[in-house]
Length: 148
Image 1: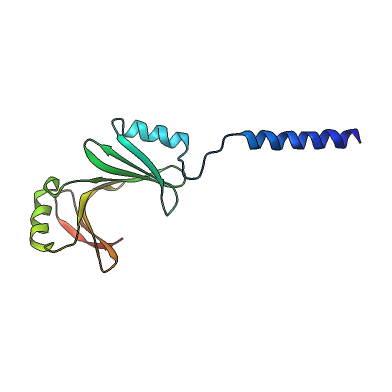
Image 2: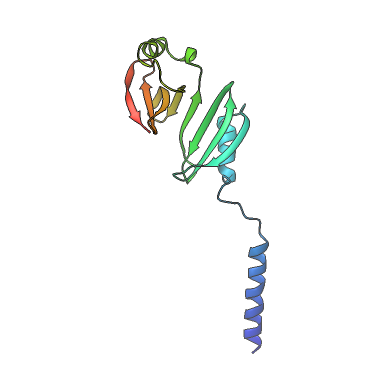
């Protein structure tokens, strides 16, 4: 009987200890990810973390005077960073193409995406309930339209 009482007391003690431990919600990034972000974007301001629909996290922030978003997968690996720019900061060839072809596009958003294979520029918009993106290479050459 003494062993059973001791085992039961240990079990209750373990439960109390685990319940008293602080827990991190699934909407909060792990500490290692926060440290990695702070190393990568040292001068970031206005930081806000959200959860990605696909799993992982998005850090929304201002970096070098640009609204930006860094995306990370569920294990904390960097996926890509979007930097949002005014149209006049896109390559000249991109600006020329947009002037010719994007007349009447509703509420476009411009920027560049840094991603492991390289960087590309974009114009995003919504048409008929479908999100679309025009992509441009580093020199500003049109690469095509993509559904998001």
